[in-house]
Image: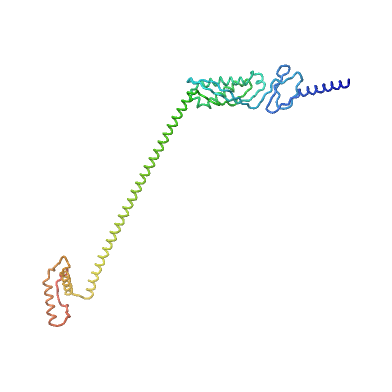
Length: 329
């Protein structure tokens, strides 16, 4: 019985020693830190790794998360410069740079950041009008991030970014804004429609202009072609007439040359003139030109008739006959 009781006491003692040893050994994971106190005073900050603590003397005052954290704060009522009340909620991104300052700097640091965010937002929005508030998100975010970062630096907190999540104006303002946006959209639609019609009319006018220009150019080219054709026609006709006149003159010249080559004298020429006069008098000619020496020609014909009657031959010698030189027409 005494042996059983001694075994139990020994087992309890072993378990107590194991508990004490395990409580003295602390393993700190990545992105975390431990703020350790000894007898109520700050001892140090344990980073990543294994650490040993003195039992019943050292204790962990605060376990700090070193990752970047996000806090979504509820909507806060703010008043703009033109006295419009709206609800704005914010999102703050931050991480802890100094675990000691975070543990001892301020009580409930997250609540402190929330209240600081609300007051900073009211100060910034109070300097802006409603339209500027709705269109200046980036400016508001930058100003808030800068102000919060400076204010939270003594607490060991680094504010990296601040975002305005929602901006909710009053219902009446929101309805008026919707009407304004609708009117603006209708105005833009009317402008776009008018510009479209204007461009359409311009294109139609340009098309008509180009069509008229093309028609005029076509008519011009047609007139030029007709004029050139008429010109070519007249040139061809003139060349034909000139060729005909040249052929007639050439034939006349050839006839005269042949007559000269045949040895015809003035009497023969007088007879040819008489034949031409006879042909002109047969009624086909409109005008008859009578030679001035018609009596000489008649005497010539009578002499020839007497000679033919005496010799009773049809051959007549014209070698010694003398005729006037101006008997040809």
